[in-house]
Structure formats: structure tokens, C-alpha cells
Length: 307
Image (cartoon, rainbow, N blue to C red; front, top):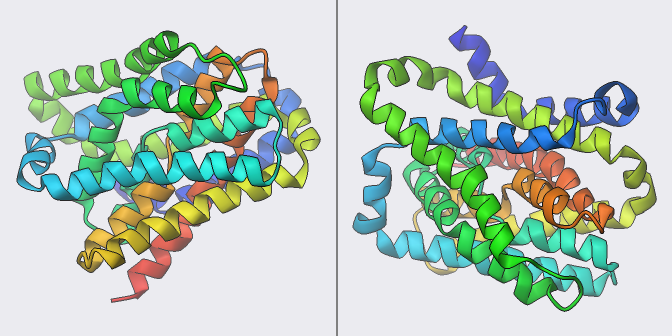
């Protein structure tokens, strides 16, 4: 069973791509599942993240504060500003602009930890960055979305804050509590959690793509290009920052992956909950969910072969 789970997590990119293609070709069969289930599914992923976190993962904030500060500053500046810039350059409409900005303003997701592990990067830094960016996301994400997209659409900062609190922070805290009081039980399950997260991410992608398959056709190739550029710029600039700061090779890999990969499932969820008047806003998150897992897996393979 553990070998199967490792296979699933190792080939997460292919799994997500297969889920997306299936949903796009046969949306009617999957669209019966309501998009409202995305929030509980995100909660499952965050709960799993809470189960895998250790106190040492948080000690990195105090033992290596410089690394975490660099990482989080890069996370919440590079991707939001790149999202806003690309939306302006390609003259996207309000709905797609909101969707791209939402993706850029979200924290890192657990997928980045899996990819960092596969690339033999600094996993402690990756987990620390994901944890810190996730914990501050309820405040930072709504404010950034308001600053960058608030002139185009109405942004309910308080409502978005509460959504992230319930969907992201609460499940992580619950996972930490379970881990504290039932350590033996959680130790037996941690080997299976990356595979569970991978399958849940694939299922979320499938639901999002199926629900927005007709809109994907309307969005055209331009939004696909914007999403790909957004992700590739994030990966490249993340690596460049590490290179310019002369960080060790393992840290550069972690920074590259953490900056370029976003919790795009959360972006799609926020678009569904708070921007229902702009149905196309869900599209960038849906495309990003597919693409960043593919590009991340490719990056991991490249990094793994470069010593």
C-alpha cells in the first residue's frame, strides 16, 4: 500500500492532468457534484497538513527567521504583482483579472511541499514557508486582493478573511490537536497523507474543470497563456531571488517552488464564494491547479538531476 501511495504522490502532476482532461471531455458526468464540496475537500488537505506538522516545523521561524521572511515576502509580492501586471499587459476583463489576482494573492499549498520533497530541496524551509504564509493568509490575502482588484470589483475583505479562517486555519489547528493527543495513530497515517492530498487535489481540479468547462472555451487561449506565464515567472523569480542572495542550492529549490506554486484550489473556492457575479473568475484558479502541478513536477525532475 505504501508503494502505491508513493507512486500516487510521485506522479501527482500526471494524475491532476488526467483528472482535468477527463472533466473537460465529460463534464456532464462530474458536474453533478456541487462546487460547494470544494471547501470541505480543502479542509481535508489542510487537516492532513496539520497532522504532518511538527513543533520543529515552527521552530524554523525562530531559528531561521531570515529564510522565512525572505520566502514570505517573495510569496506575497512576486505572485500578486505579477498577476496584476499580466492582467494589465493582456488587458483582461474584470472577472479574469480578479481570478488571476486571487491566485497570485493566495498562500502556498501542500503540493509545493510534495514537489520540494521530490526535488530534494530544503523541505523544512518549504513547510515553514507554507505554514507561515497560510497562517497570515486570512489577513494578507483579502487585503492584497482589495489593493490590486478593489477598483475593478467589490472585495469583501472581512468575509474573505472568515472564509480562509474556516477553510484553512481551523482544519490545520484541528490536525495539530489530533496529532498532539493521538501521536501513535497519526504516525501510522502520515505515510499515506501525501497520496491522500494528491488524490484530493485531483478531485478538486476535476470538480472545478467540470463546473467551468463551457467557460474554459469562452476564456480562450489567452487566459491559459497568462496562467502559464504567471507560474513560470514565479518559479523563475523565486529561483533568481535565491541565486542573488547566494542561498544554498537546496534553499534555492525550495524558494523557487514555494513562490511559483500557489494554493489555487483556495483561489477557486474564494472566487466561487465571493465573486459569484463574475463566474469567469474561477477559470484562472482552475487552469493554475492543473498547470502548476505539471510544471512543478517537471521542475522537480530537473532539480533532482542537477547536483
